[in-house]
Length: 280
Image (cartoon, rainbow, N blue to C red; front, side):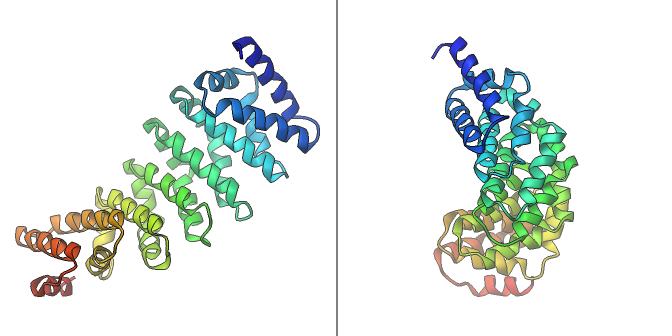
């Protein structure tokens, strides 16, 4: 399809998406979602269309779950172009995404909104914006709620945001550490546990997160319990946290910690290591 033809199609679909029945809107949005899924050029053409992005944002408030999901999918597709990440992450969009994430009635929309947050936050300059807008707190609140299909996407978005120091502070102050540790024992999903541990490892890079972990009762026992499991991603996360915890201690403690972790990874027991655990 030529560029001129694509522009005409985009213009027609935007018009249809803002008027008519939900069925007409769905057809128009499906077309736009399809042509922007793999083509960076089509994404740029759509973003350049007058009033396109505000229109999709308004459509995320539609009473049709299909229209909401398609609108979010299109915005996500646009966010895949690096040059569109910054203009897409304005405060109006971020506040709308926060509202969707906190809405308990639409797990699919929450999943798509979280994916869009994660994509936009991959641009480091956007991370602080999300922190200012309260997205970190929104994600933690949503993750703390009933388990849903969106949980993994919510955690992935949080993992991206806490790579910025300011967002790490917000996460710790909003109860991220106990929430994430709670997921380790409350969920049967190894991917959720692995992502939770990865986030804890990111939080532990900064003093706020590390101190919160140190203050947690039996944190070393909890991490060594993870090392006894079968999920390699979880084991790696737990090992990283233990290294950071013991890095605050003496060289002798770090040596014992390293030996203990090797033994636990091998499924063995070690008397001195167990004694070390009792001290925590």
